Length: 122
Image (cartoon, rainbow, N blue to C red; front, side, top):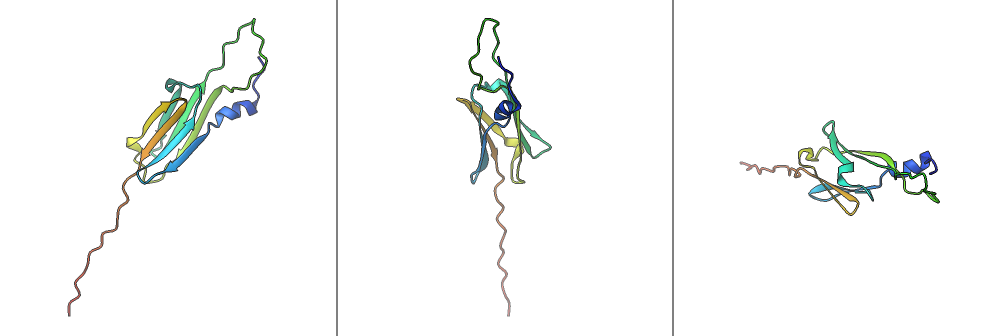
C-alpha cells in the first residue's frame, strides 16, 4: 500500500460542512461517508465553539494483497465553528444517517423591543 501524502490526508481532514441558519436554529451538515456515529464526536468548547471531530481507520493490509489504487483517505479530522451569541449551546442535538452528520443548534428567540405608548398631557 502506498503511503498517503499530506494532500490525501487533507482531503479527509477538512471534512466538508454546510452551515445554514433558519429562523429557529443553526444547522450543520457534514459529509462523513463510511464513518459510524461511534467514530464521530460533537462537542461544545469554551461555551461557544462547536467542534466536530473523528477518525477513519485505514484498511487492514494483508501481505498477499496487491493495491492498485488508494484514493479514500483515512486519519483524523476536526472542524471548529464559532457560534453566535444567540446559540442555545445547552440544547445541541446531533444525528447521523447515511454518512451525513446533522447538528442542530437552537437559537434564542429574538427579543422584540418593548414599546410603551406615553400619553401626552396638555
